[in-house]
Image (cartoon, rainbow, N blue to C red; front, side, top):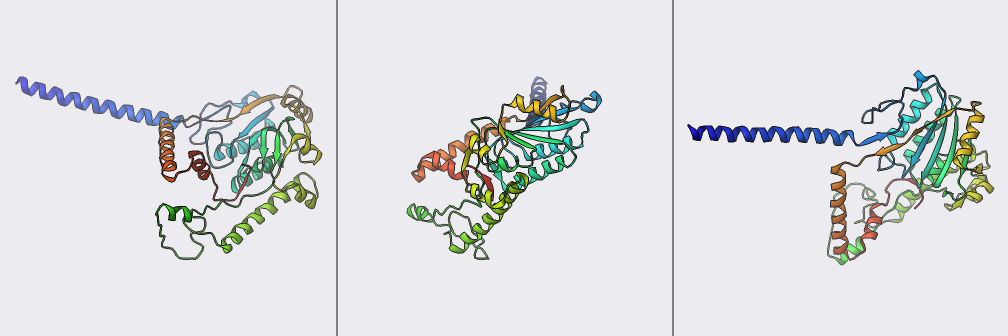
Length: 335
């Protein structure tokens, strides 16, 4: 009888542990998912984002949205999120109490596709009769400049860098000789002679170079046309400036790429004057990514794998990390 009681207690204890583990896992998983995104003063609750909202419309007060765009412009990373940015611009466009966006840009640019989406979202915002001012942080280059173009005025700190008007159609790596040296052969069964274009284990042909150059040229023409139209400049004048170089704030003013060198507070004062509301309040909108335990662990594992691979290839791990950052898609990006 005692033995049966002991066995029953053990079974009960195991079941209790299992139930506790399930509750812990569910809560942790839920907390991790909920912690993925956090925003300051959002105007709505898009799926997957914080529900910490301010009901602007109930206050009945006009306001300027200080919208921060930071990091590489792509689908998502630790400082930037495309879905959040587009959703925020759209919600501000629909909010009658919002009178202007003061957009702080600190970005080296990013994908052509993503930058163009943001550009058109800002154009649609302005079409509602609202004001858009841009203030450049340390670096607002390439795609960072691209998304600044719709602004009524573009200002910068005197130490800001901008420009880099140009395109990287894609970075192709030919590692065939390296693979031969270490005795690795990769065979990929494919149809279409350019299907493997861009794979590091396949030689780059002159035809493939021409294909990528045609993509680059098309994206370049799009970029310079936008600068010419939005900055009211001659197209040929823009092309002389658009050789990929970066410009200091002083150089950018001289070349009409920006409107002046100011500090943030002075720009806010000008917006208040422009909208004719002297005490118009400013509300900050800034994407904040909270790293989950899973992401942190994955980062550690990736670093260890890269160090091991770099050691086997006989190259510095920094070189391998740089290779991983190469983009295989068209980008308005300053490196």
